[in-house]
Amino acid sequence: MNSLQKKPIFLLPIRCLHCVSLCCVLLLAGCVSLGPFRNPEVRQLSRSALYPPFATGTLQRMDLSVDVAGRHFSGLLLLKPLSDTTFRVVYTSYAGPTLFDMQVSPSGYQVHQCMEELNKKKILGLFARMLSELLLISVPDTFQGGVYSEMVIQGVAKEGTGAVQTTVGHTMIRTGSGGQKTYYWVDQQQQELHAIRIPGFLSGWRFQLLTSEDGLLERVDVRFQSLVGVRMVLTRVAP
Image 1 (tube, helix red, strand yellow):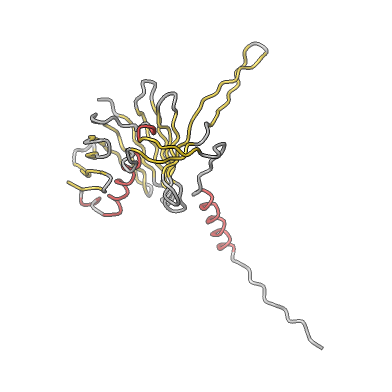
Image 2 (tube, rainbow, N blue to C red):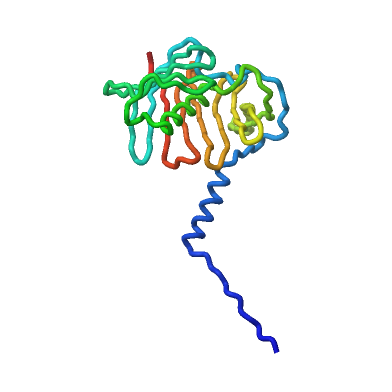
């Protein structure tokens, strides 16, 4: 008579279950939700369709605040356009010394001057990548992009006993293909770029742009998918 052998049951420690849950959350967070956007129309577009937030030929002054590992520092960021896709960028602390001076272009970045504490490839590469994406340096003059249907934001306002519906249209434009896609949210009526999303489990980026009533870029909020607790905020400084 054959006896039944009990197979051992392996239980994951609670700590492992927490790790699995965290991985699932991060995986979902790395994906871009298209929401109401469906069935993109493929078009031949120009770079100007994304409404670059920095005007060519105009020196821009921005306050750049950085929060990392519980520390906060800020300084003045000067952006000087040399062409549509090449910028000279100087970041100085308010105490006086220059933190870094670099030139960013489609071919990469070149460091002219850098404080010793920041003169590390990973740190400078992070700043250069952020600037390259925000300044649309990596976007060619013409490209084949996917244009998604307009997202309609509906609002209801009371007027007497009835209701009035208002709509605001935003269009999402996708560049690239495969694992190198970037999504741009633009307001075609106001001709403004409002957001940039670069999906990725460990390499995702999120840019949120705020424009003032006079059409000038007022603020940019930058978040990194893989660097929890790291945040960059750019705020326009009046000339």
